[in-house]
Image (cartoon, rainbow, N blue to C red):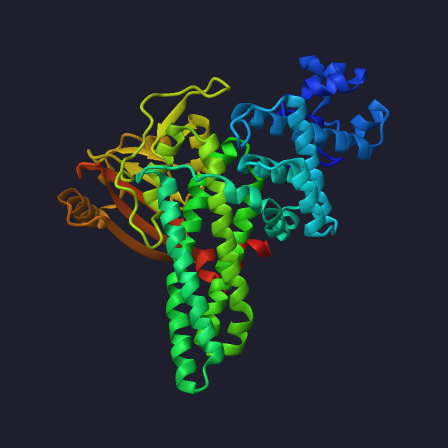
Length: 488
């Protein structure tokens, strides 16, 4: 959560509970925060700007003090629990001091200091920085208000400063079924493809005949087609590894990496378009930077991301990641032998607010959350069990009327006689296993309604009922062109 003068005290403490005690120690006027009644009454409306006035300090000073407290807490907590690269646990005061110096070094880079001068300062500070410290440092910069785009812009410079320390760090060994092993094998293939593309690009630049240039462009097109599979590598990283790291408060580096991944994706797409257009000049001018970015990302993953993850994730978390990796797939390589194993919840857990969580293969939700989810669906769903009885319908965006009287009703009685034979046929096909889906669409005045039925089967293939999905697709049918999320 970005910390600004307009952040409320309530949001601040909800995100960083330890700050309640820190605030009461910061100024005696904040003692009321320890009173639950006064806290709920005042903290929801009071901003950091208001609190600064109460404390008698400038708005800028107070916001900076809060950001510093957050950064120190995060880094001290991480280093106290995991230790440094040498395996020693730093004294908390020394850890905080070192973190502040590291952040100062990076800020100098962002303010325009030369890499040489900053690197010398860093070398004087420490010889053996580990990946967790770098991750926490970038996260602290973002927590203090530095835009993610700014951290991304100089991410390569950050790595160059720490490269000597990172290069001497020993690689943590993992077995062949570990998710990191698959990432490393994919990176080996990616590095080889990048090398082959550089060779083809050199051939393109030195070709003296149209035939030689066409041959080089063909090789580049094939290589870029192979390289495009890196999207699967990035997607698995972003959707499988990043969420678990974020649960450990490793947030900043994941955001920076995701932005860089998207940049690489766009560049590969553009490069393939240039090949299709036979635009050798533009390709020669832009592709080298793209290939360097991919090499740099491989380095950051191998030297920062994977060591950080191996340092903070538990064996159980890695097992859960492994179970889901196969859902997204792998780039160029076969997945681990054990990746098909599924991790499912085996008992009902209790949420922090006392509500029961319903365990699902891909998460857990409370009944209230499930209700909200179904109400928010932009279509309506009805579930009919294996005995042809209506057991559930959603109360969201309905097209056809439903009432509680439908629950438990025989589904044949929910349709007019003229369509009963089709209902019978659909159910018969679903139960026989000869069909899994039935699809219809109708025009109802200005509305275009899309209707689908899906057979539901358990892991053994037995029929367990039917799902009806009805969608007023009028708006969707009218769309054309593109509007991406960045255009919203």
